[in-house]
Image (cartoon, rainbow, N blue to C red):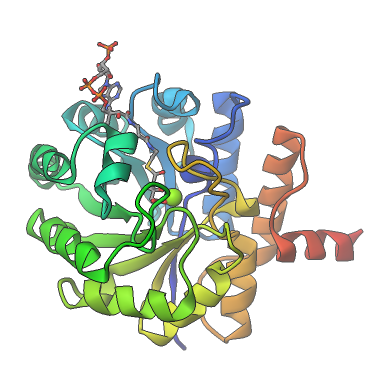
Length: 298
Ligand code: HMG
Ligand code: MG
């Protein structure tokens, strides 16, 4: 049976844009529910400036308190060496360097140019290798930029090649503002796959324009087998105004299981996790499949 690896990014990408600061205990419970549901990779933390992203200020606490399930990778964002050191102390299994295919977004998000960011990542990459940590590279604005509009697939390919040179084990092709469409996704994936093994490329799609599921299907047709999703469709990037959450994990699971693909994740338990976090945030969840399954139970 065809297998897909899902990376659950709700506890990081999902929560980072929430104005209401949640207690670390709620985040810990969310991570635990998700790993118990079967996700083998949970993005649980982000070691960035707390002035830039206040919600992630409790990342060390969260990492210290989660239950570590055997075989599960707990990932953390690390924009620089300071972030890396915090991630190492917090026992992250994988660190994520995050750059962009757009100069303007790079400046807004991490306060430096693409070249400067890649130079900064050299230290993080070397430190990750020296400590035996997995290294993932994330590329924002691969399908479009809130400041520059269209982004050429060749720009994505260039950053992909630089991330490969840094020694990334996996590279995320991210549609930060959810503007991409199916054929475009295939073009961009083809450009990236010319620089990095397709089996180690992932699709990280936000659902702003409602295209994320179609884009996942298009990427599957192109051979991509790693996708990111967020429980209850939480999320958005604080430096991409108007961008909504990641594609909802429940919806992706419903799609993949319907295609007969194996994910190792139990949809019903993810629905429970979605209900839990939606209640903590005081609003209904954003997953169509999640809401339908909850309605069916009631
Ligand atoms: P900067 O201001 O250029 O950095 O920020 P700096 O080195 O000049 O430091 C300024 C202050 O930040 C100093 O503190 C540092 O200690 C502190 P001060 O002396 O003013 O009190 N600092 C840190 N504190 C904690 N952890 C750190 C750290 N580094 C510096 N690691 C920096 C540069 C990258 C740090 C800043 O721009 C930042 O934190 N940006 C956050 C960006 C972010 O988290 N964005 C959201 C995640 S990316 C995303 O969502 C996209 C993704 O989902 C894919 C997609 O959808 O596109 C991954
Ligand atoms: Mg994102």
